[in-house]
Length: 417
Ligand code: BGC
Image 1 (tube, rainbow, N blue to C red):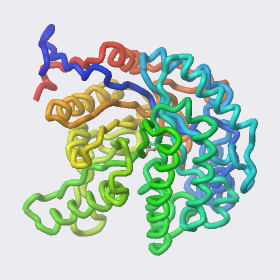
Image 2 (image 1 turned 90 degrees about the horizontal axis):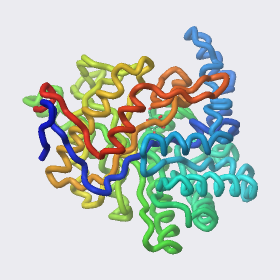
Image 3 (image 1 turned 45 degrees about the vertical axis):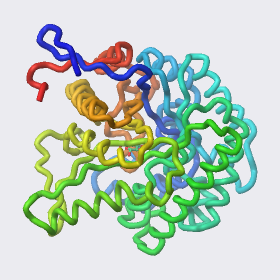
């Protein structure tokens, strides 16, 4: 329940609620050679962008945010936001640039990065795999090849051994369904395929990889918190009276949000929930009919209540839930503060209905490289100058810092409902 102050309702979050910001290795570090960087520079990709009248340079990750060199500054920014945790990734292609060859220098680099987070009193949330593969791995078929499971295990073992003492929460795999769908069904991302058979194999291999990695981490650190992130969409039938659409929404929820987790049979200590999308489904092409009244710079509908529904849906897994990503592309920063507060209002509602939500991480600390959409979308609480890499706080950074500090949000009359 909330208190009222100056006509505003104050919603308090639980004691020990974990506030954080999320990032990923490829999107911020810079100077990485992997399957994505190879694709971005490929002739076919460049020609396609040129044909669309776009400048290919805006779609090449290159130096990204230069966080490989500026990691200490980034940690300070997260600390300055009063966050208790920072989510970052390890770039596999740095650790194992050639099959079976570990790069000690890079392992040491990541040790320094994590130690520095600890020195700033930040809990470390570490992602092992966030969509990007070393090129040698991609060449051997990537995740559609069963052998990749073994490679991932060796890589997990190494990271656990070398860095495990510095990790508070493990994210084995980021949003597996996105890789399956974009990489193997609609061909939007590397490896740019349209092959249901391979998509299915990839799904199965990712399930297995998580399970074994979960075991490896627990063998060494029995108390470790090991989970993964799911891109959790809120699907609803466009017309609740239409049985086909009701079934369609049910199936979409089952296959997209739940199936991967169900396959893991409880082998996760928490679920990382990434919420961005609300989809009203219709039974005929194009199968979605969003009204898109309020949208982000990505063209995505803003629908804060959806976060409540996806949290309620995941309650059945009986594990702590962390919002590991929620954010908005908002170049002018005139929607971001409200976006965060509106979503948190519904996170709070879920908590008050006994859904075990233990943390919220805003995506993202910085304007970063937004995959196939390049540098256009601006998700950051901090703007990044593309030439100097200077980080500049947006007004919403102050708002988020206040929320993290006080562990509360204030809701105005109009937002009471
Ligand atoms: C991904 C991020 C991405 C964000 C915004 C998430 O699905 O994990 O890497 O930048 O969405 O599109």
